Structure formats: structure tokens, C-alpha cells
Amino acid sequence: MAEKQWVRVAKCQLLVASAFILLLALAVSILAIITHSGGQFTVFSDVPSAKNVYQAVRGAVLPSGICLSIVLVLSGVLSTFAVVKESQGLMMTGFLCFALEFCVVVQAVLWKQERGTEVEGAVLDIYDSVYEKVRQNSSGPWRQELIGIHQMFLCCGKYSPLQRPGGFEGNLCPTEDAAIISQDCLQVMEAFLSRHMWYVSSLLLLTLGFTVYGMTLTSFLLFYIRIGITWDRKGKYILAQH
Image (cartoon, rainbow, N blue to C red):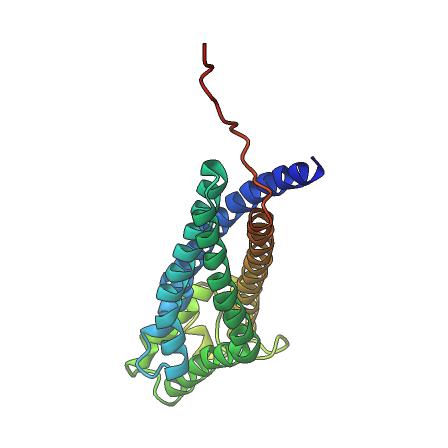
């Protein structure tokens, strides 16, 4: 009887975990779309001299995020139906989806730890390159690119907080607001990228945690089936013989 209670608790927990996993799938999709199509990121992709590292990462974010979301949805839906239908086959498939998720998310976390700063550096290098080209030729084609970056991040050039912007930076500022004029673009971009990477890391760690939890619950239920303890609650009905 105690085993039956444990099985029922595991089933309830798996249903709750599946609901959270579906929410995580939605969050992963939204974050992938923002990273690929957000204005702060597209403004750099339009720069002809954008670094290959940044272009490659931005191009891979959307398909990778959508694929991960699909696997998350599959694992959440299959686990839910496995509990509702009390199906051993669906439970096994759900466990395999969780295992696939685990491999994908671990790779993403390792990549983030090893290459995350490289991507941030690539974005700052793009701005440095455009800024220096405009300094060399303020009337060249790079001027509009630099103004577009300033307008997107609401900053103005590179200089010390103790230094007032000269004529060069002043002509490229998106507004005359003193608070925006005093913003160093490299500091603003670095803060934005650090905040965005924090969101990415938090979402990956949450996904990893729920993935491990889902694997544990599905393997627990499958184990109890293998040793002959069913988790069927429907009961069986036999017509009485008169």
C-alpha cells in the first residue's frame, strides 16, 4: 500500500513538472526570438564588418532555441499523457525525451560558460570598429551605422564620465538629454549584454533542473512497473454472473 502512495505522489509531481516544462518551452522560444530579432542585436548584424563569431552565434540562436522548445513540449506532453493514459510506452518515450533534453541543455550550459564572454567581446569589437572608422571619416557611410547604434542603446560615444563630449560625439548623439549624452556606449552595451546573458543562464539552469527532475520521476514510475507494482487507479470491472 505504501508503494501505491509513492506512485500517486510521483504521478502528481510529474504532472506539475510537465506544466512547468511547457512554460519553459514558451520562455525559451521567446528568448530565442528576442536574441535573434531584437533591435539591440539586429543593429550589429547590419554592420558590414560584423565579426564572424557574432554572425554565426546569432544565426544559430533561433533554430537552436526552437528545436529545444520542441523537445521540451514533446517531453511535457508525452509525460502528461503517460500519466493520464497510464501508458508504459508513453512514459518510456517521455523519459527518452528528457534524456535528449539533458544532453542538449548540458551542451548549451557548457558553451555559455566557455564562449559567452567571447560573444560579448565580439559585439564590443564591432562598435569599436565602427566608432574608429567614423572618427577617421565623419562623413563616410559608417556614420549612419554609428548613429543607429547610439539611438538603439541611448548612449553617445566613448569617453570618461569626467570628460564632456566634444564636437565629434555631440554630433552623433541621439538626443540633447544630458543624462544620455553622459552615457558611455561601451559601458551601456556591456551592462545590457551581461543582463541578457544572466537571463540565458537562469533559463538554462531552470530547464536543466526540471529536466533532471522529469527524468527522475519517469524512471521511478518505470521502475515500479518493472518490479510488478502497477500504478493503475482505474480499477477493473467484471460483469457479475447470475
